Length: 100
Image (tube, rainbow, N blue to C red):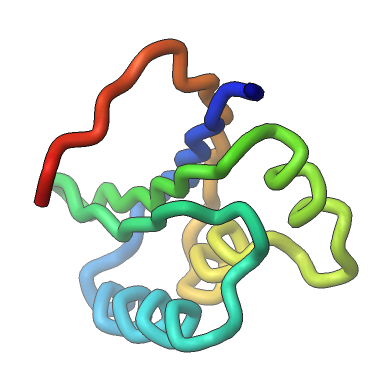
């Protein structure tokens, strides 16, 4: 079984565009999600730092999304609010799911 992949797209968003970012993320969640996307979250940090973390079934699922004609949603969303996103791709080496 292939390892799960966690992507993290991060950017600093100005305070006057934060509501647009949150609304845009909500709109993304209402659309059809890519095959193999297991979880995605919008996270707010201090001083305008925001992240979108997405957990993928495996690298093949991530690569299939990236190969589609549509640009990746998270960086596109950040750019739409005037932010300059940075992408990190991490392999989940170990993990355990806990009950909700």
